[in-house]
Image 1 (cartoon, rainbow, N blue to C red):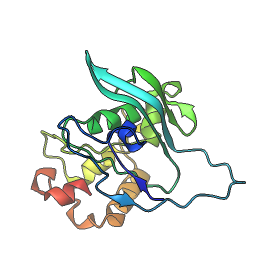
Image 2: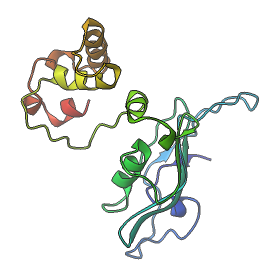
Image 3: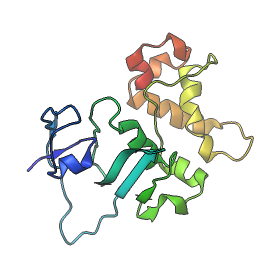
Image 4: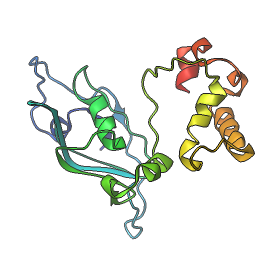
Length: 190
């Protein structure tokens, strides 16, 4: 049976599939099952959410969401506006703390890591980044190397090579000297 990405985890597990508006909800994009290692091989999940809940004040946004992301898997989170997709990403990245449940990175609770360790292992690219300074595309990619530098250090040749390699892999090397505000939406997201 295929796996489905769904913002409302309780509905994905077979609970009521009717939304707040009463419409019947089904996953929009069936995903093929991810290849699983042999039962004898124990693989530590890269990222886990174990019965995570969160609310803004009295408004409960996520209730007992659980997910496991293994090496090589891709996860899509799909749902209507206001369903908690961005909140889930913020919980998984440690920007927000769950009101209940645990988020684990490589088998350890996210709270057991220092912020710098989390930044070295996990990155989130915002849906619509706001950058009010004319950074070039390469300078923005180099910002991802910040957790690997000591305090007040400038990127070295190795950091520059890593950033350029990442841009080449994403087929945007040709825009490295262009200001971010001069890139198309697709170029910016890559």
